[in-house]
Image (tube, rainbow, N blue to C red; front, side, top):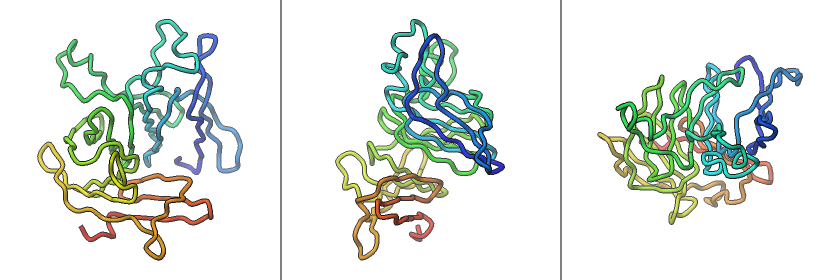
Length: 237
């Protein structure tokens, strides 16, 4: 986070005695506790923008609130109900993805509902996501939401963005080492090219224990301590 602070979050969160537990804590560069708060249950991924906006995507249990006491709290809407939520650097909720019911009640534009925020990425202050159901590509910039249809890849957890290109690693029914690159055109995505994600000696780093994406770069960490990097910018698109 800005100023060298570090945000640590537990992805599960209990709702007890009328309140959500604090599952997020911010510590300073010296390791001292600065503040804590609740980001809700069922967290799929978190990205932080350069200005300190905390963007959180939730999987289905966070959206529908079935476990960890949320289902037992009558009338309590889960924090992750919208699927995508933003918090400020002080852990205050400041923006939520508009639920589908709002369009029918207010006449506002309807956006694809989120049952599970499979992927999340940030390029500067712009938020990108690829969501279930139907896995469209979302771009959220200063509250403006743009949507591109995606008929190429479903269920990928790694999602990269570079200018007009987007890329998915793996996906349902796709080799886990396959990188599918598409170009955003009009309101859809057109296949550009596919690649094979490999490591040293052309062997894919299958034994990674952590994987994350940021802008055009994919980061994978292995049990042996190796750090693999893949950058769409290096593929000469």
